[in-house]
Image (cartoon, rainbow, N blue to C red):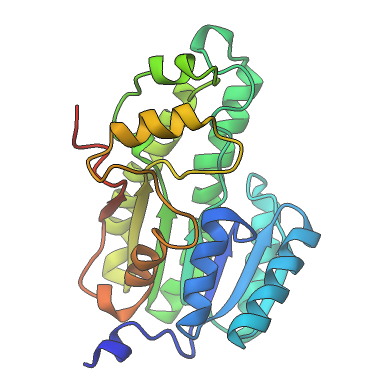
Length: 267
């Protein structure tokens, strides 16, 4: 098989949950560039529609924008039905919706039960809802690729002195718990679904530099990373996502692909 065929997504339909911005939009962009038609979801329809318009203009693919709060099981069921009816099949699911690290009070002793439950629903339970709904369709097809977005937070503990030094809230324990759950969920889903022809893998990104981050934090994080920098939006997650979505990974399942510049190596 040629290199272009290995990485082609022509005639495929991908659903990117949380695909309107940041890493989700990067993933949607590379799937579209490889030829996939896409369903993009966001909690707000306006955000999804803006991303869809950009993807259509840049890559000439079909893109359906849908509003989705993936924490709500009933909403997931409706949106997945709409996505399947749109082109008649779903070949790729990317569970990117999540986040919440650094928002609100982050220390364990200060976290409210509502904050904990919402963050876990956003980062773990919602992804499971989407896997359940889409996997039913993929099982009938006998094929599919599911990619869950986890984090290095699910692999190691954090040195919170770096956050305190730079006057940042830091990462909550429940965020680490949720992302570790995504990794465990991925492996067990792979065990269940791979015999049905469904590949299930996840990506664990490290820290990505963003506007508004204190420069001191970027420097401290980069100093703790063997490659000497944080991740770059628009660049560093695209290859991993395309690999796991494409025929190039047809003998890969149950894998956690760590994209962190080596951050998880130095401890």
